[in-house]
Length: 261
Image (tube, rainbow, N blue to C red; front, side):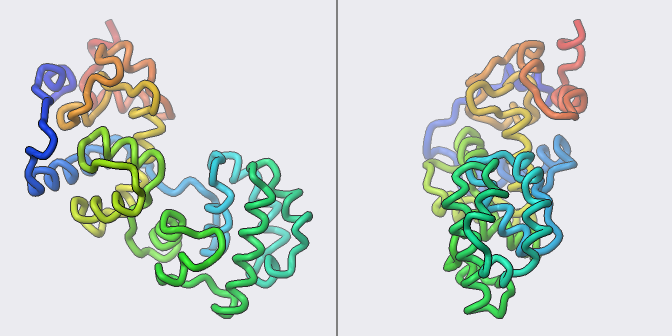
């Protein structure tokens, strides 16, 4: 179904009327469509080992990945191990990570992480979820990022993009990250959890933007009950698309003719 066809398709779905099987099928179709739309989806934080990823993820709170990646080279060059962080002077760490914001709290978390790893895990980042969430600065979201990308253990990362988009898609109802994580685990194939998270994030940055989603240029239009929250006119919606694959997104949405008039 093209985006033009999708605009004419009924999208009203009363809350609670969709069966779990139907919702699961729709979630998996969304994942397939997102895989085609965002084949370059990945973790955008730069790292070479699990510890670096953990530190980068802590720094990414309330900060863009681009800014974090500009900051971490100097940090990773100076602090290479958990013991390096454990023995670090807070003011030195703060000076390096200041551009990421909330630098005092982040420095405290990073140094605390180093100390906890040295004291309880022989300086190595554990793979186990229960152990990870006990570490300073690491909650379930950060743990899933680490497990999925550094250790290859599938996990669903529930960030603001995931909360917004899965609610718009009607796959979940609510904003509690832990509840949403477990709800989505039942809908998406386990092997896809990590990549589903990346695809949703890319979709949120490029298409399903918080204030004004590009509904008329969205490849998920035919299965989204929230279609119409943003502009449905293809040409108008196309102007909202972001990223370096706008032309491909327009092609996949089937709106080339409308955009090129």
